[in-house]
Length: 194
Length: 192
Image (tube, rainbow over all chains, first blue to last red; front, side):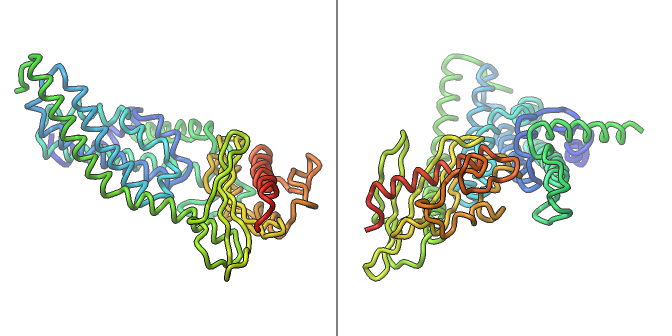
């Protein structure tokens, strides 16, 4: 598999959210606005890339029976780093995402990529894979956040598109997340079918 | 290839990984500790200066706490040239729609509300978060009112406060927090 393919598969063919349907908890929970979705996506991307690289580096010295605990410790360390840095330097975003940042530890995508890809491939390929998957995840979360924000409060990235009185508040609430995600997946499937 | 899964190997590997991880985390914590503290203090200081008239002391260094209703109220007295100009009280309510709400309420010495800022809340984005002063005019109606003759309850509950549309619970919780601050302020005998 070429590196380019490795990178782009995270966006369309194996998009974590729209195709693999992994990591639904942060997907549905944090996408109340495009900015929140993007912040969550980028935090996950950092953990994915760093986790993939480190796990790929140490894959040969870890005994097979303790590989999962080892991966979890490595991933959890990076998540805590993101959590602390975000609290210190981006307090507003941290207040919004709050609980969901520590939850990246148990995000299926992160451990999934570590087990399915980084533990079998070279450091370079793992880096590309983590970056592609992470950006695909960010893209999906931003798209879902933007759709929900536009329909739910008539704004996107702080720009008002139409008055809030015409907005459908349900899209900002939890049920709206499911409805919006369902329609986006349907559209994605239709487009990729051809 | 991966090393053999002997007891010694597994223990040593896990020990090494946890050691390195905790060292890295300690380092990150060391570097982020100060910014985190600063960010928290900045938020409180910012809220205090927003809810009080001009003052020239440092309210955070004269703060004191009172236990009320199973929670803690924090008092920040403000003075200008030695004269009391008011008191900022960090108050709370447990009745929020999404969990506890923390507010900073600024009182003038006679008990009049100068302004109110939200410190933290978990209300619904787009509905209950209109409690925040930047998002709607809800908090403006409290400005310059003295709870002595301004009943801190929603109009539908027989009070003087106009609720946020579709956020009755959040609005009620907000009133509850402000009233708790006012009562505590009066218990303390106002700002001396």
